Length: 181
Image (tube, rainbow, N blue to C red; front, side, top):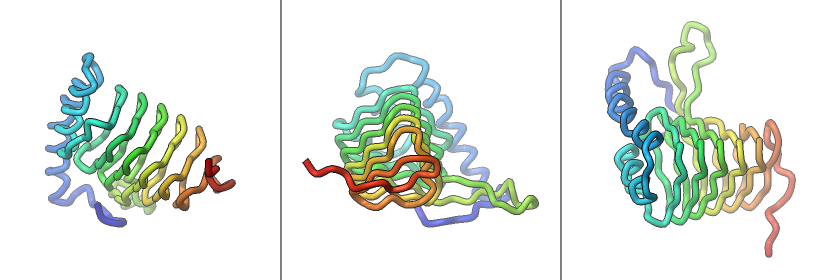
């Protein structure tokens, strides 16, 4: 994962990305359309991401990704149903994170100028350790959610959230620190 990268659709990299996407699509369909044990889910996601999914992490299906190879998932976490990871720009999830149902993590945007709008702007999403993302949260490209933060349900996160803070709303705003015991 690199910070902010412009990717032109006509570049030589595009064909390679399409090959990876094409190889992953049947695996993603298999993941979501057939019954699997937790171990089988992790095995399929390891194939999709190319990185070991820790045995201590639980992932409920359906789980969607548009690319797959730029996802890193930490240990002791939980990802609930209907997660959508748009990961070409990179998505990193730390240890002990809770990802609510219908959460969308987006690391890709389109260029603003009309003539370049099919070009992609890649900017990684980083979810640090011990973060809790409530149901229906959307995290936009380039955002880091700091260690131990909580993002309230239905929030749209457009800017970094500091460690140990609670953010809610659309766009999300920090409202208070996380309670300490």
